[in-house]
Image 1 (cartoon, one colour):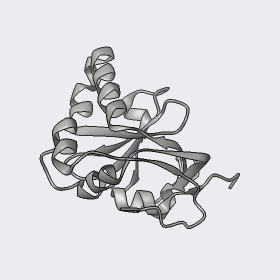
Image 2 (cartoon, one colour):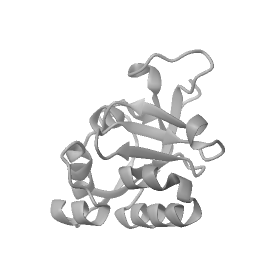
Image 3 (cartoon, one colour):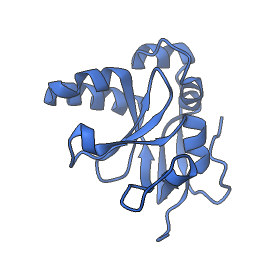
Image 4 (cartoon, rainbow, N blue to C red):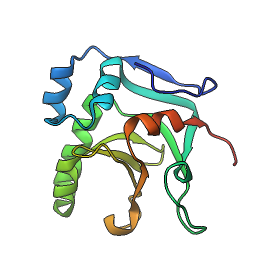
Amino acid sequence: MNLFTDSKLVYEGRKSLLSESEIRQLLEITGDKINSFIQFCQTYDGVFFPKQAMMFRHLFYSVEKADWDKIEIGFFLKIEDIITNRKLLLEEDKELECFIKTHIPFADDGCGNDVWIEISTGIIKAFYHEYSIEEGLIEIAPNFNDFCSSLENWTLK
């Protein structure tokens, strides 16, 4: 399953050997709102964007002049890295426990800022760690399919 619709997008995917049930069990997913994410994880266990990827929030949401619009993506995490990241974040910051248990980090901008998918809704969010969760968490796409199809190679736009 390939959700990257930009034919010029350069990426390298690591082949997944996991089944749907293994992914659901490892990531503690019970609902069906993120099925496209699970299917993607059955195809790829991590993706690297050698030229860096980007997407724009204004494709899905109203964006004011001072708002975040351009979102950069360096790579998608491997399943084992998702599990490790969630565990480490839970140990480091108990205030984020509710967020971490209801979201899955699946991508990184290359600077340690994560992109998350909300398990119950499928909404995609970016979290900028330099800020509090109230200031640094923003919705960037309504679902995983839209997020992936909006990715393009990074430019100075």
